[in-house]
Image (cartoon, rainbow, N blue to C red; front, side):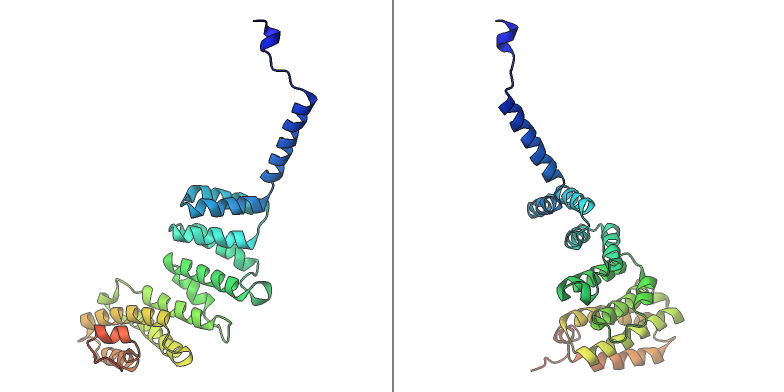
Length: 243
């Protein structure tokens, strides 16, 4: 067979079609929304690396806060907390946690994601600093809860040692919970964290009762004042069930 007969000859129409396809590919390659949607599909089928790559490509093309939040949440769900925190910090720096720049739900997710990332990473001092003077902040209840949780977590696995620092932080946490319950009532999230605090308080009192019976007395008053409003804790403490 002659070489001429086995060769592929492209017509002008064929070339036009190829170049048109390349143009469409280039358009897609520069389309941030396409990569965002692609990332969502990857995430739906549990292809984590594919989702991260697609979301990342979308962010490189256009730093859309919606995509950044989606990727931050994905990092958080995969325990890649440092990567999640970086994105939350960028969103906060871009003022997307402020009511005038985003919806209530979006800013709530940014604030929550930022502080939960700090909490998981043990960045307690940062939390103390960022929640020192919150006044009538839009998310005051949430910030108070993170502050109380940070004080409690900062002494976890240390309560058996006792000491002034440990006692002061547990006291701070109790004081903040008293404010939360007084101002916002006994909501589920607050009660969950309250139960965690009572566990640490119980351990502290068990190991340090004879060294600090006065603090044990204040703990008893604190728990008694609020435990009656938490049905789950009532059962754990074997209190009589509330009507």
